Image (cartoon, rainbow, N blue to C red; front, side, top):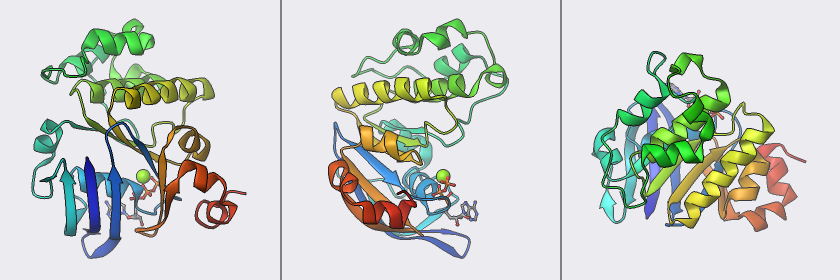
Length: 234
Ligand SMILES: Nc1ncnc2c1ncn2[C@@H]1O[C@H](COP(=O)(O)OP(=O)(O)OP(=O)(O)O)[C@@H](O)[C@H]1O
Ligand SMILES: [Mg+2]
């Protein structure tokens, strides 16, 4: 479904992604793991063409169609949703305004405001609260809910569990696993190795802009050398 091949991305003259290749199939959760500053967000932003960074080399295709030269809104229309790192929301808009600002899509997966509120009941209680009045966990639920409102086929999630209480992380994991069951493809950037191992079918490890390891979650779990070397985990 998503195929990224030999991507080279730059911030100005800084050559950050140095040949990143990865794939995500429908109904698959693929995790991209790596330490701080290794190029995870840069990979996600490159896929969405959110200059900066600028992709200078490589191909990004979605269902065989090249995305490289499309603007972000056109990429979103292909049903690729982004949950950005740091849950970027509008401070002055309410929960309901965030969820209804995008034109409801002809929803193949049936994502409506009602269904988002059923999935995240806390958001229903907080409907009239503004972005800047929400807790970290509520903001993350809203960022995911807003992504679902475009009725995506593929979701790119950049560290969704960052800063969340364990109970919220579990809830989010349940939601992400249920999206896979519906056949969505998910590219999950994580610092939380345990969340990634629990959810992902396949895992890529990135170091200074290069994919240095790739395998199933089961294979990675059985490979303490790579965990230690690339993630600093014992
Ligand atoms: N806007 C920018 N301008 C210049 N360099 C940048 C910019 N954003 C990121 N970089 C650099 O690109 C490299 C990769 O950053 P990136 O944000 O992709 O890392 P990351 O893996 O997402 O890290 P984190 O886990 O901290 O979110 C880093 O060296 C960073 O300093
Ligand atoms: Mg990042």
